[in-house]
Length: 83
Image 1: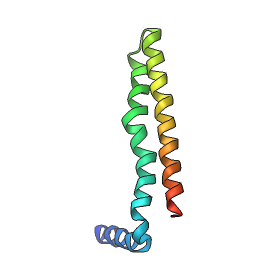
Image 2: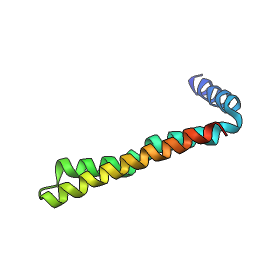
Image 3: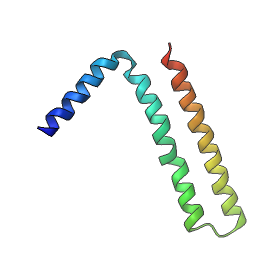
Image 4: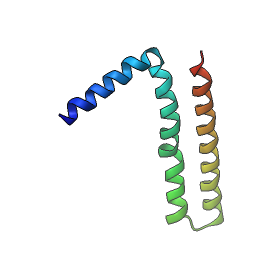
């Protein structure tokens, strides 16, 4: 019963969003994939393994660059929503 309800919600959402599904997925991807791919590994390395100043600087720079990528991709997705 629960699976049927979830499938029904997914189908209803897909029909409701229609042609804007790809734009929704681009925003969702920008908000979730960038941290998973870049931010979290660098933060984990910074907290657990980085010992030298050089290693810490590299980790922090990766985090900053990944946050810039996250904001940029999200902004592009939001901008394309109106098209």
